[in-house]
Length: 101
Image (cartoon, rainbow, N blue to C red; front, side):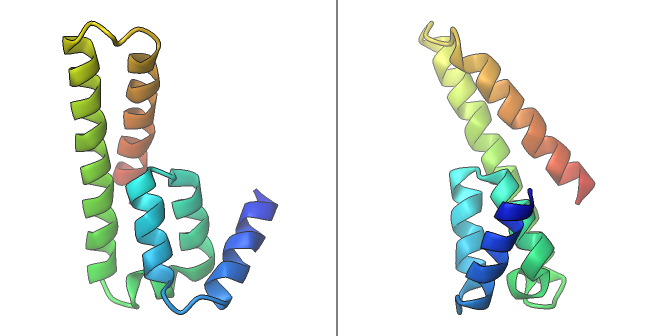
């Protein structure tokens, strides 16, 4: 975890729009990267206000909804097989992050 934290710290120091990085991580479902970025540049991500926390929660809820849609679509097509458990795990992790925040 030390290397991702250091990479995110360097990115945060050399990027004017840290919130854009966070949004990218959120839309790609990169929860570990989101958490690492929050650890090294929380003020930059949240803008020093409570509204940033709402943006984070919104992204997480959108990720849960998107994952649920994908899961239902795969099951409906009979193509769930190996992917449904992966989506369930992703949804569980995302929900855990949302509940901890």
